[in-house]
Amino acid sequence: MTTALPLTERTAPGTTGCCAPVTGVPLSLQEAERLAAALKAVAEPTRLRLLSLVAAHEGQEACVCDLTEPVGLSQPTVSHHLKVLVDAGLLEREKRGVWAYYRLVRGRLEDLARALAPTP
Amino acid sequence: MTTALPLTERTAPGTTGCCAPVTGVPLSLQEAERLAAALKAVAEPTRLRLLSLVAAHEGQEACVCDLTEPVGLSQPTVSHHLKVLVDAGLLEREKRGVWAYYRLVRGRLEDLARALAPTP
Image (cartoon, rainbow over all chains, first blue to last red; front, side, top):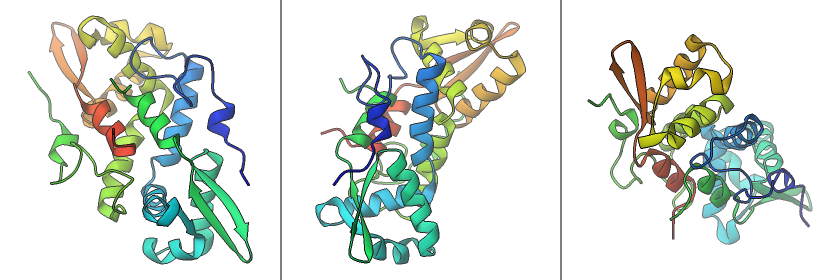
């Protein structure tokens, strides 16, 4: 089961999977806004820690019940941050029984990294 | 002439030049805060466009006088955004005569990119 992947939906021809690269041809306002929105989703300490915790879990997937204690925040707060990451296409969410599970979307962090600095 | 490079000053042993990577070992709060601060500097459309314009200029250096018209903002606003990028260690500033020149700091965008996704 997959959720919406806004970064993919916003893909324009000639971009690196999600966003046009910073170096090379100067970014248009639209390209800069798209990349800034994707970067804003990760430019927050709790969200970086959540991504990092999910990435370190077996299968790069974790239950929300495994994430609240390590970041020391309430489940509603953690769920809010996870939703921002899902909306940005960085995580996929799947409900199984009473818990929601979050999985790292392959290639999304790499897309963002390539937009900041193309790999040689 | 070089200005302060906060991303370098914040470098901790075992990091990728500026920040610990998101994937691998889960980020500590301090590591996440450091990386989030660096990402926040670039997670803004005008600043991405300014970085992109400087990068596309000859020698990856541009006068502030070359940057105001392409982004369509006043010089004080542009100078504010440039200062944020200098403070984050992404640009170096040099005053020559009446104008300030901004140069891309080699390797900084690459450091940020590697923190998001280590290159294979």
